[in-house]
Length: 223
Image (tube, rainbow, N blue to C red):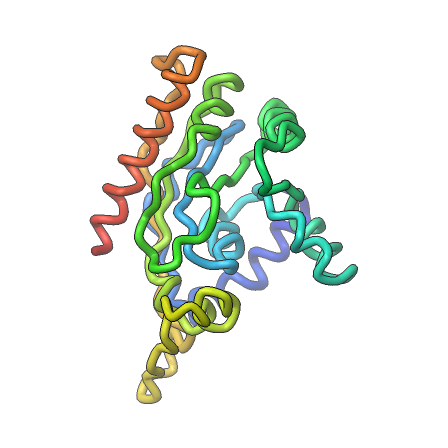
């Protein structure tokens, strides 16, 4: 882990636990070598939650528009291992980038739904995650984030979804100073191993479906 990641996590994790009531379970399922983390996606703030929950250096894919918000913001997210990806079709460069990172022993975080869920309900996963796992022979660790869609931070950073009427401003509990921005829970599950899946679209889809099923089971534990 790079020193900046270790220092950043040590300095900010206690604050995240207080602000969001962040609770993490199943972190022991994360391995030491290359792996993919497959998480549900409900907020623009999800990558920070993932970083805190993983307690290790990770790499993300982010829509390329974010890197043009401002030069400072673009530099900042690159500093924390965000990599631009096009959303207007297949981005073969992103596939090659993820493969290179995995071959270098890194952890890559993917949101297989492809976009944020407006109402927080899990959407079908896209098969690209299965292809990456099988071609690179790396495990996929399922992860579920609960509570973000109902948090105050989501109301602030997901204004496009709020304007469409999917999310209302949550009520603040003024009698308690704990988790003022909402209560967020993260669960990791048992990894899906790629060795029993064949190369080719049927194998990619089968592995993806298995990962999705495990994320759904994690979600049921927070229902």
